[in-house]
Length: 490
Image 1 (cartoon, helix red, strand yellow):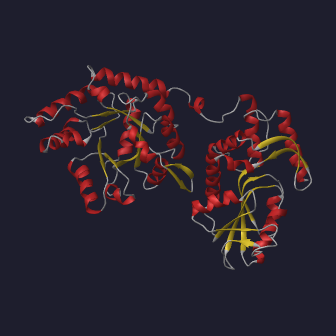
Image 2 (cartoon, one colour):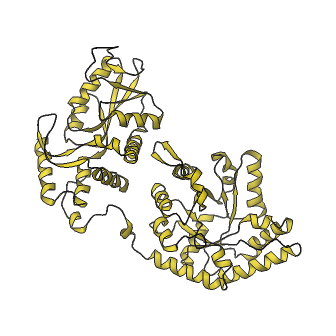
Image 3 (tube, helix red, strand yellow):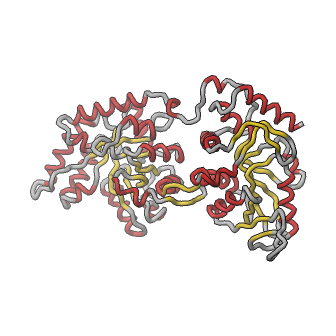
């Protein structure tokens, strides 16, 4: 049984190449001798480039244009001319459901006996199901295409549990979850999209057209889209090789450039790596791994001036050498969506009927999270108004329902327990509190005594680590803050 991605990785390791050669005949379809014309052309290109090719990718449209002779020629090219050890992707961009999709799959995999195919996911998971029935075959789903007009559809801003972002990112995450045999077609001339998609789906294979004739650069595409293992992306070049005076030389130069780009250390392009001096600063060990996604969010919070140094009197009356003001987030829409996505990732497995934000800082966060998770929202009035309905809890609810409580951060449990009490007095059940930052060192145990489980996306030590690595605080300031936190704990 063929296994496309295994074949591909073996080929890449053997030949040290990420080149996908597009076999797209560009001449006008001839009235006579179509079969022999196409076969002769393809034989010339394959013989000159197979030493450098990780795979070949014929676009079926160019062969369909020749009628039956063209499809017969394509079948011959795939099964007679391309060596068995080199995988073949048929660029068909099929997209349908039901019996039509079954027929498309049979044409590609039974008739042409291709190893992989490109598909259009617009009709959803049902459109790829019949292709997945063929074990071992690879599927590349259109995600971010290289044509300028694609932005009209693919860059529409959508809201989901990951935040507010471009539609193509939603496609990437959704399609990647359908099967581990699905890759994504991502424009090789859109480095920002390559980097975003690689960050969101770090293991998925990317097929990147748009190199050369459409302006994409090999080095920048690889830096943005390559996996940490040096694979994970195929750079497609068609006209730049097939229409070159010397296709073999064009293929060789492309591969040599890929090898040079692949030798550049990945660390040079990582975000938030910090300085070597800053990383030597001793710190308290975090309970959980500080992922790159969390580092990036902390960096954005710092950039939005949410972290301040000085002398600040807290609600408890204690004077603190630092202050975290998360109310500023609402003035930064993209950051707000990422914060809401962080909450979603933290609470998506919890069981609850309604969301509630503690006024006022958490209400915008809770509103967006409620929208993303499609959950109804209520909130307690910390001070009951003396006019109107005088409701202690705003919104619709029924006694006995379970409420997930949200707040921006937690230093002590006092105000949180006040909100819990208001909700419980109305017959609502509260068993979980989610915060973006756990600032205090004793609040988790305090809440547990009242039957409340605390869920925090970041710990104060995570925040301080990134502050130190980015030189937002000096080593002396960092140590002073640690001493303050430890004294506050005692």
